[in-house]
Image (cartoon, rainbow, N blue to C red):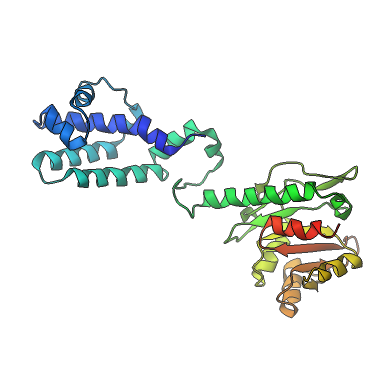
Length: 298
């Protein structure tokens, strides 16, 4: 694990300080004056000014950094800018480079797992898509552990397989829903989870969850299990509200109709049809909660 702050300290600061020290010396400031402005020692200024510090070539080629250095050097040398203002301007610049800029790229290169995320993101943003997707994946892993450790869960898996899904807070489509790639299968009496949670790999259970949310349900997770009248009774005994939907039509409108009649439903189910296996869908706020409901059925 490598923090972006390490990239800033090891790559950006030596390059930035050496450029600024050079620019200030070129404007006639002494080593002592430069040291006071930058808050570093005179020996450090000497090393920076004489190229004795390793600099990042890609940062040296960044025109925006060059412009910033010239702006700060002009302001500091002329006394029109305080060291505090220069620090603030530099900090703002660093934050920009961390949000999809060169520092973000250097961070990604030094920590390859970040390359899995194609969209631009701010590593410090508490509401970033990156943080939200990782939280959903983590929640799914916790839910899957509950299922894997539940003796007898395999007996609840329908012939088509089960899947545990959880969506992002503002999910709009399948790509915003994380699930098990493939399906959770009954493998010789044990639940088999074939891979790590991914986004966009479930159509059916994710589609049910999205249809429920479109109809006004605020659930963010769902799990499908084998249908049995006794299962419905057990879920009702847990205090959950159940609603049946018609499998003959399109699933979205069918779920919408069911939730229009029973808006507070926690469980949706269909009793099957020609070539369609009957299935129960448990809804909930997150994957561990849904998994816990199913665990109590065993």
